[in-house]
Image (cartoon, rainbow, N blue to C red; front, side, top):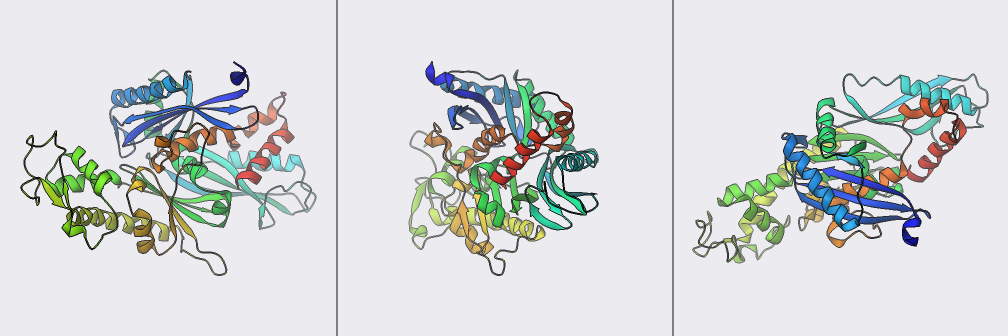
Amino acid sequence: MSGNQRIARVFGAVNVGSFSVSAMIAALTEDGEMQVLGSGHRASQGIKRGYVVDMAGATYAVRDALERAEKLAGTSVDSVWIGCSGAGLASEIRPVEIGIGGRRVEEEDIEALLVAARESLEPDGRSVLHAQPACYFLDGAHGVSNPKGLHADRLGVDVHVMLADGAPVRNVTEAVQNAHLDVEGVVASPLATGYACLTAEERDLGVAMVELGGEVTNVSVYAGGMLVGLTAIPRGSNDITDAIASAFSIRRFQAERLKCVSGSAIASPTDHREMIPVATPAEDGARPVARGGDASGQVPRSDLIGVITGELDMLMSDVGKALDSMGFTGSAPGSSARQVVITGGGAELSGLADYAQGVLGVPVRIGKPVALKGLPEAHSSPGFATLAGLVLYAAEDPVDIRAIGSRFTTTGSYGPLTTLMRAWSAMREYF
């Protein structure tokens, strides 16, 4: 009981992916420590390329995953934060400026700026997932975290806006609501995953993050502490599995097992001499011999790796083009080499970091979620980074300019100065 009294807040999170649906219940203690109470996952259902294609199936998968987490946590939740990886995600940085005539910046000026920024939002029929003040600037000088007390002719703010197609977001939201849950918010997976996998220094110096999911790969670029670019590629690790199944004329679950157990992104000189079984002993005799295999149902490992690298070549070509289009040019003069962080379920493929580093020409590391107390080993892998990031995001509760007006007009404990100080505190810590 005394342990429960130390819990300040409990958060629920659900990540609706194309390969799996996962859920987590975490608690923030009174001393600010995040502790995972329970987590669970199950095979995805009703989701294709990040979009809901079967409402009943998606709702069942959400409810099932959350019940597994609730059982381990020994408690239930009524509301959750949702991770969104498809739905036509787009990221924009929108600068907003007002004139203040060269005098000292006061709280009222910052209030007026944020309200002006809120009123400038024009989603053009798209859904705004986030609209967050990222960094202030004075007379064109960027990188100001707290402009109060400084003199300027013009005061501005860079607002990070995350957009998504409205209908797909509503479908994901409805699938969760149909599971008898309230939705606290829909969070773009690159933002949530960034909380779990990237350090504040990496986000500041410049880093690219590649979320290799089942059917969608999100490529995002961070610079100056902000997510400054995002490209979604409709290709993922499931496409590698399908290519293996097609090449050897085997079942999809057998192809997935081959990829995970014996697959690699890096070829070895001895691969052609190593024969690997397609089926387990229990499956032998229940299906024909694999195409290209021997009489005992084994295939050369070199053939398997050839199929995998063939698919990776196409995927990494798309990733490279996306990075180029977003201005991520590797190392900048006078600075340490920029880095690419690969995460998501597909990042668990053996040798992927070395392969990607050779193709992209920049340092590459695999991004695992930050260590959280109570997080089981099975859910500490790259495939659960977004899920961990969702509860971290929920606990931080970043300021959204769409809520600024209501916070300024309340007469409760959160006045204008309190709200702004929360914004500044969040930006100093995370940006």
